[in-house]
Image 1: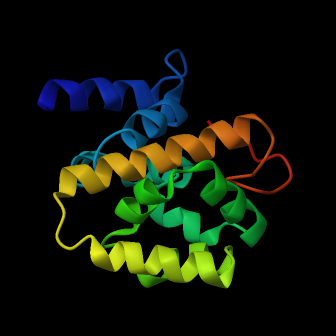
Image 2: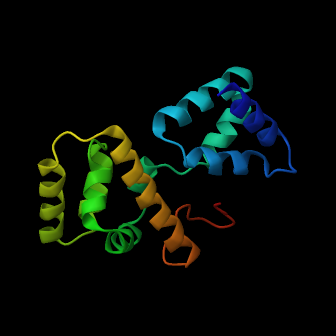
Length: 156
């Protein structure tokens, strides 16, 4: 992993390969543990760079900060069984945010589905979360939701 980390560090510090934004995009595709390990290694060498990369990343937990309209749009565009798997083990703020964006009946069904899943492999949950984030990015590209709302805010 050292070789890959060295490449990411060089990429983050340079403008030719896209800089910190490109590294954030790459790290967003990794599972949580790998992402945090790489960020910790970058932070040990350059705390400011690690902070910049973190600010450019959008993770599954960040979905809790989206407005209800955007979350509703994302829930409608995502297979509910995949969403339930992605929400397995997620913090209550993420689950509550999705449930508030749905009808009461849908929210109850989603919570029931999450609870009914029982223990799941972490790799399956991470894959489902990546799929939900990919759907969010597609919706953003289509102009149907904003992952990072605000004037002048540009997201990967």
